[in-house]
Image (cartoon, rainbow, N blue to C red; front, side, top):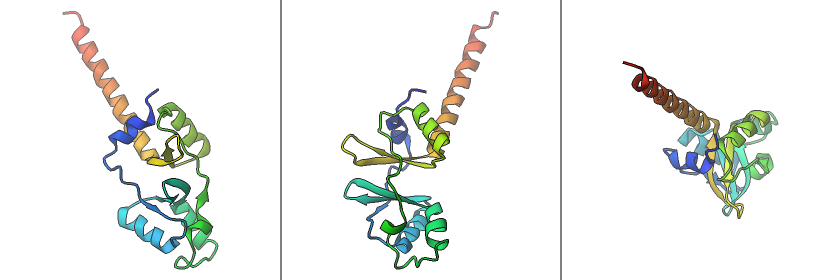
Length: 149
């Protein structure tokens, strides 16, 4: 599985990135996450990633810490320096990262450190299922056409 993650990004049905600045409130982030049915929001300084704010951050760093979501800025509760990958990283490398580090969402950044996409574990699973389905179909066709008559 040496397919680069850039290929997976190109196959996504929606390439929209939902982002907010570090100064945005938790309430604004949760509203955006609910509006678009997202599990996370990328927190950006310009086009560079400052952090990621996830459902788990809401539970542990906001609700669990008894913070007011209307006054707490993302900068105070986001996950800083999230693990990122380049678009040339392979599916194998990414699978090792997400399973080894228990990551559900992985920002993809270019050489300049600018965000170009976000991969979810769902994106990877969809690609794997499609890949295995295509391989199985190829093998069925091969077996069906190469059998002696």
